[in-house]
Length: 277
Ligand code: URA
Image (cartoon, rainbow, N blue to C red; front, side, top):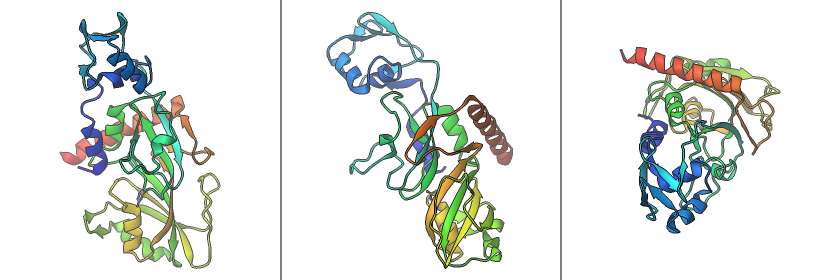
């Protein structure tokens, strides 16, 4: 199982069981902190019993939650958004060491329960999907076959097309063989890629598509063919493209993008089932 899939699993079944303050925030009653205040003030009840304990967990499908005697319902709509991640942010919703995280760049207060689907290294830029929909997140990061991701890598050294052959065949890294990757040498950064690599003499530009999500995978793949990555950017995640979204900005997915993503997650699931037969 990949790190990403394990991380989502770690959140437990979604959204059936969760902390009461998270439920209240997700239902739009108040922010997480505001919901905690409501609880400690004794204004929240679960199945008719006042719930002041901040660790209280509820079953979203069964328990009756009330604030000041008014029933609170689970919101029907999940949220899907993309962030153009800049360099210098960790892909996590909180960091015990207090380093900058992507949580600072997306509207977590408005959409409690938002989490990143997969991860980009701190120095990697590009498209990062966020959602409150654990099922879709899990489907897109299915351990046996992730959705396709496109990366642009600025690498050290003048590379020839022949040097990409081991990656096309499926290179073996220290944690096992990689699936064959589609890759090509580019002359210039595509205009809609959303990055501005500074190409200097003695560097090359590689576009690489992978389906897996192993730690530092692209950097390790290119390092293994003796062209260390200097800069890495992800212009596309499955059917999604940054399409002019400024670095550090986010936007909600459009209906057509969400449909395409759902379609692609079904294909991913189906392929995974067939591969496991
Ligand atoms: N591969 C890497 O090496 N780093 C990333 O951030 C994403 C893929």
